Image (cartoon, rainbow, N blue to C red; front, top):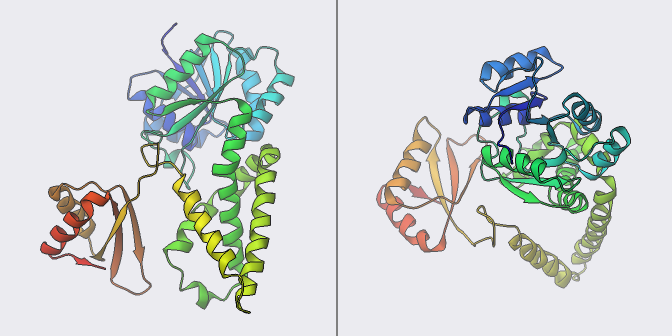
Length: 355
């Protein structure tokens, strides 16, 4: 099987530019194409590749919104008869069906979906390590070993982990783990529109965590939800039933009932959260949290992390919280249980205030 020698990227946004940056680290020639000359120039200036002019690549990666992906895939399959063609759209089944109507040659197409992104889009937000250790789903339309090999090579070169699923498996999985959370976050954030600003001033980290992705691009997400509506709708219906049941349980608390139902709901939430894989995959290990008060001034976070490094404890996860008007922040540091007492003792000895 031939090695990956050159790549054409169509769409110089966040994902396309990040792919280009990652490939250029390996000296793979990358040729970029974008309808926006501004996006294209920016991606080229960032070092993601050069302009695609009369080039014949080994692999074409289509990095466009879902409603433009199938037609561009069909175009690239015809324009580059010797190239493997893939995409990064977050919906796979409906795009494959559209492509089959537009092209008879789907043997060189391998669907792809990197499970990575940022709230900000565009080439300006691109990062060469955006995909590092992240899953990258591969869905093959046909059993073409050379096509699969080249797409797997792309995935490994950018630092991601290839996971092969059927188109149906992929769409159901992302409906649950990506599309449903996006919808819920947007619904929760929209509830704030009609609320008193004085109440919203009390917002803590919980609300910020749950609404973080609500700032995502509504045009893009409308396309994604529309393309995957069949897989998403059953989860939305199931959640609506759970919310209706929760509302009844909460209302009954006022009259002395509902305690068992609410307790069961919260317990099931604990059990469900425990099923989410840990940061390295596999079972989610239970962490203990050390909360450190950090003065709101330059260099304090850096000093904290340097001293934790000297102690020899690894931070598994990190959250930062500020209270309105306060000159301190709270750094919530998740560590393995066996490191908890050591970190608490040594940070206290170094003069850090723990909450």
